Image: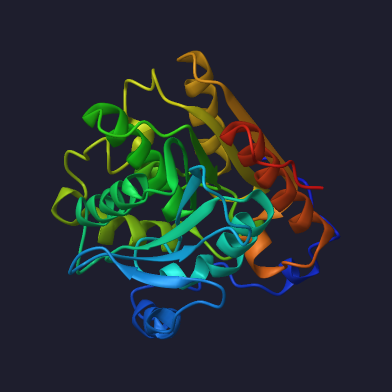
Amino acid sequence: MPDNVFDPGLPLARYLPRTPISALTAGPIRWLTQLPTSRPPAGGEIVHVDADVSVRVFRPIAPTTAPVAGVLFIHGGGFVIGSAAMGDALCRRISTELGVVAASVEYRLAPAHPFPTPLEDCYTGLRWLAAQPGVDASRIAIMGESAGGNLAAALTLLSRDRGEIRPAMQLLSYPMLDDRTCDRTDVDSRHLRVWSMDSNRYGWRCYLGSSAGQHVPSLAAPARHEDLSGLPRTWIGVGTHDLFHDEDVTYAARLTAAGVPTTLHVVPGAYHGFDLIETRSAVSRAYRREQLRALASTLGEGVSDPA
């Protein structure tokens, strides 16, 4: 992992903990992050897809008769905390600035619901989005952060293999792709923030359930998937002080080698989730702009390029 200092535009890095998520803290944090789930988002609505899955949906302000592109957002939280409401601000911005339908999917969490339940919940959300009469199913991007990046990558693979829906893009923000990172002994933890080796082991153990320590399905850990061919255009972003830096760089290289058009955006001196914590920093704003530009350039005609 590169050994440079934190970006000076991220001053909170000095004070943030390395391991906020553990077996002791996950329950209370999960409760806090799920408080907003029952309230409809400002400018959007909650749609119950089935008894287990709902989506928080944001639609373009300007009415249109032609189908528009869609974005399915998958929140992070190490598989054990978080809610779809965490994507409200980003989905609202994506819908407003790009003129697309953006939906944040509420998937069930581990350890109560280990793999493959969260992934299948996300697939249910994707099927719902693709079936909407105002959405062009050929122009859907799957977007995820951290553990949501894992689910986005796995959902893209699952969609390719099932052949029912073919996403136009996957956008993975510091995705949690490889359980084998838990076994590394060469990680310098001094510059890790928000997500440490201990948090990583806990999150993976909860998500893998009975598969932990045994045969790990490749859709649970996409970095294990041998065949990455035939996947859509990909954007991967990660900071140099993120535990997932090395696995993300490796995954991007493998995608490129498999013939997948791939953009790797590395942010020097950035820690895990920096853009969610220090949202007003120039570093975070630039990171979000790159994501919006990637979505705009891929989703095609009728989608503007953000400034």
